Image (cartoon, rainbow, N blue to C red; front, side, top):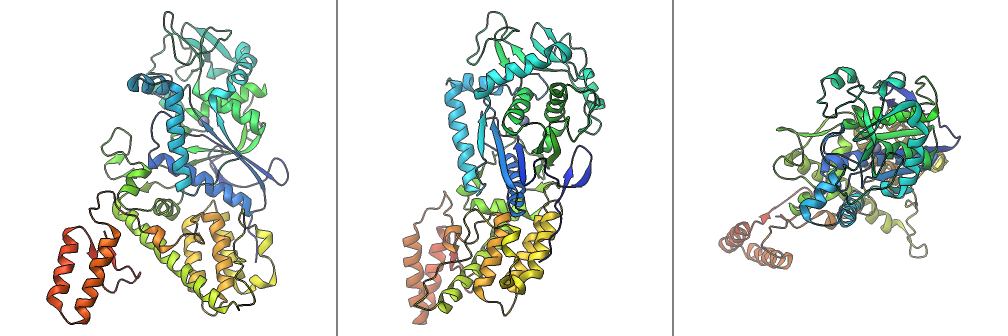
Length: 505
Ligand SMILES: [Zn+2]
């Protein structure tokens, strides 16, 4: 197969750039993680599906990947631009619990979603409160030249670095229009890197610092953990597009200050060579938020009978830089597409098992722990599928074009006269980037009972069996009655369903 160079869209230069690792053979990626004060919205999870596909692609290309995702358990205010309260303190007060309990609960909820979406674990989950000393060191290092102190904290003067806000289109105009609630700031876009605890107050989370008791700013923690764990410059920094306006420009400004340079050479001074952002998940009523109506978290999808990987499929069908519109119909369509693929894979497994002789145990050669790399599919045995594997590599190398990758996968499955084991291998290769668990999932796994369902699976099966017997005896009145009574309980009987499902709830 032919190999295509990996091109990724860099938000900083607004160009597609060929990936050239800082350290040969390695890829170091930092992704902004969740603020663990509430359950993650599925729109937030899109960012981690995207970062996961990026990581899997880098592994496919043969790079030794180090991926860091942080957990923000301090410092993120209700407004990204220094206004409002600390999200964690606020939720802890509302729930009358300790911040540490809140953080643990929602971190675990986030990890459950990560697992359900088959997102690979990063090399490290870096927790912000574990890096307070490092944040203080970082802040001390840049304080003299780049910061000034106000009663409320230590502020970063954005005019001390070149080209502030270059990452965000028109951020200056927005910055000027931003509601500025902190008196004494030199520039509207200046931001706190250390927030002092107001006199007479006590925060649950506070630490001593040269600027008084307080807590670090949200932007500071990502700069510090990226620098500590990956070293400046590292290869790729990812996040949701909402970070492109404030959080990431502020991280970049801090990184420029830390590097002690005047300019903004994106390759060396911004902290990362490539900055990548995934677009929003939207619904027709506008941008979804936690305050708008039904809270769309992964568990809600599962409660309604959708397998979580149907949501991953939905994300993969769109390009990560495009808005993705959420609808229940769209999710249903993604589930059906996933089911079709899983059924085709099950059929291949069955055919393979038939071909394997008794003396040769079915060793499932297509499964490779840790996924596949490009180098592993160059042999002659892949020749018959090399055209399609080249198309797969070309699509994923084109700024992670997963919707094309899905089409190529379907072409592999429909290709005639190919040994099932070879096809299964090709599916496994492609899935090492898509991450849909196509070799492990079964049709049965995909059938999830909606929480509201009032009938057990045994009752459904018993009803269907009686109906079958009635039909065999040409007793259509009984057969129809059974169908009706199942329908009353929310079970739709599906005769001749192309996916081979006899019923659905
Ligand atoms: Zn961040």
